[in-house]
Length: 485
Ligand code: SAH
Ligand code: SF4
Ligand code: F3S
Image (cartoon, rainbow, N blue to C red; front, side, top):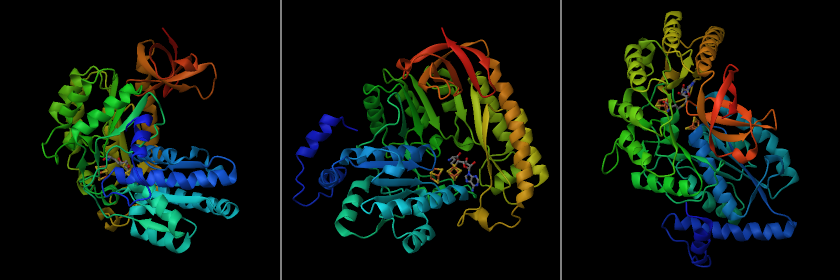
């Protein structure tokens, strides 16, 4: 995104008394300028600034989208505030598991009385859940107090939809089924000044049989490498030292570009950016992790020593039913190869328990992988039936009590191993990027190591955003206490 002065200079050239151009992103700049008038008038009427709150319910990609929402809200003239005092609340929703949906409805229920007290309040909903027609139908019928509903493909239209709502006095619903469009150069408001997520691709083509993401995020689209590099260069000029490259399956980056390019080559290009210190990425699908990528990781000075490599299940039989397209053995071979090339790498994973048809033997295979790989940490999930996915129609859905029992056993195993694996760095000196003041002790700060572990140590908030060397004095299970050296 352009800097503030540049952006304001562009807005000056836009005439909002005439019609809007069709060209993006200028069309949205037009609506930002238009919405600004409304916000300014309302704020003068109330004699105070207007406040907005954008809340994320989903993954890092959703979080990055929320930064774009915040960027647009800020440019329109809203100041950030908690949702109970906000004049504009937008929820960026997730639908990967049922409980993500439930949370949104719960929160909406709490907003209703707030809006009654404060009729000019605006409520927006966007993100993955809105791509499900049943959800939108339910909102249209039973949640009439919602003002704006849009999906994952047209988030760039946020300013335009706000103006549409302000000018129509009706619920605005705008959902696209899919898109091949990527709109660049929209405003965004970063959470941290020193690190940032960067989308490198959108959507997913994998259709794992349990997963709703391909249905709500559409087909895979890679961003132009030049646009990615340009964005990172701007971020670095703005103080960013660490980037997290984001995609549902970064390992298949670039396959659909006019000039195809591998993820490994993109990383090599990003590595050359001066001033950038650390590179992370998420998520890697095991089936697409290439030897080229392993080599690049082994030689890199900037790629962090951490790989998130979701296994989902340790049973080859279940993996096939999940449509993951690798076996337990292939996964374990891949892990060996990675560890050979990058010996001190930290490995994390995602595991689903209770997929339809999972037997105790299948579950034992999962435990076996956990014991063999010895993950630094693992996100464990109870299988959640998502309407419309192939797995939802499978016979043999597993009873709740059986799943719960397996889940508890898995969690115990994962945690015990993680505590052992985490402690091996005790006594070492490693570089940490200081992210925040410690939550528990005002005289301490919290830094993130290359391997993604956190370390707390004495220090003042001036250190935030800096890379400092820290001795990892004491392992506390999943984090360290340390001292700056
Ligand atoms: N694209 C990423 C994951 C995106 S969703 C990947 O392929 O690794 C994040 C995690 O949610 C998945 O890895 C999976 O473990 C979990 N998940 C997805 N669908 C689920 C479902 N229906 N029930 C339970 N967990 C699910
Ligand atoms: Fe879902 Fe599989 Fe795509 Fe990940 S790779 S988003 S789990 S379909
Ligand atoms: Fe959820 Fe959408 Fe991410 S469904 S996990 S927010 S891609």
